[in-house]
Image 1 (cartoon, rainbow, N blue to C red):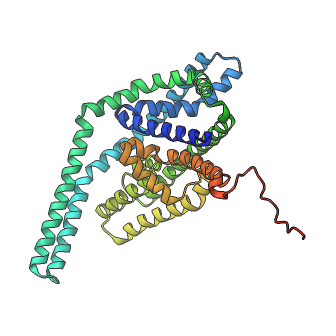
Image 2 (image 1 turned 90 degrees about the vertical axis):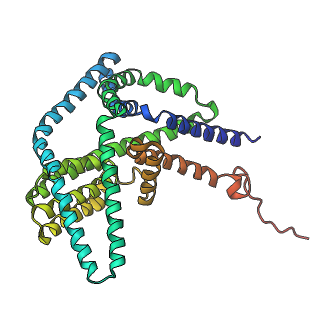
Length: 366
């Protein structure tokens, strides 16, 4: 068999094996995924301390402690600021539900004047059933999040296991890279290293750019919604900024909550249109300024591919899959572009060996 075909089959088989294994252990992946992400971001700082003469173990410990202290300081500042607004936001949910019920009642009364009684009754029964199903699903979800021992175990593992995993990854990062490098096929060594560097650059660019986008969006929405006089504006801004890690989810969730709060707080079209204008301006800024300037061509992902990646990640690995969908799609994009470039140099595409030049069309004289 052709050696190139063998290598291609090997990498495809390895990729499928990794996907299957991750699917089998997805329930315990959270602390390890978070620990790996933190270690990946903090590794350059550890390497810099090591170049300054600090031992790797001590440098890893110092960088991790500084990161945890910084995170704790941010939480200590943010939590008191948004705690009251979060409680206020939760307390306003029953009023929002009653408001939706009133609007549905008005809609049914309007339909009663224009539709036959049988159709109206059928529509009312369908709406009641759907609302009951939605409320039941939300109640079960909240109950499972609060009372599930597995969910509690995940939270405890994030607090306890993640720092330990992060420390060992930081300490042994170079050793792990060297071990992986030693097992790479020698014939494809430079190729794999080159693609690994492209993947690393893509991930670093995505992490840095997305973090800045989340921060800017959080400040913008918190400020704009506060100026609009909306209650819980700071909490909504922080929520939108955090959820902006998952494209479309942050702005969609924030828009629904903000419009609902504006409706229950003011009950006027002016307030609703003001909130919609704030989100429209925010999305225009994000789509035309923030994303092109801070992410630019680092990720190379079409919006349709991003949406597909989100659905696929959620279907395969749940919440973790949704969080990791975009960076995973970026990595797959790097590898796919490499595979397509190799395909265009192959005999499958050209119909002739890429190393041999086509014979010139010479007319023999008779």
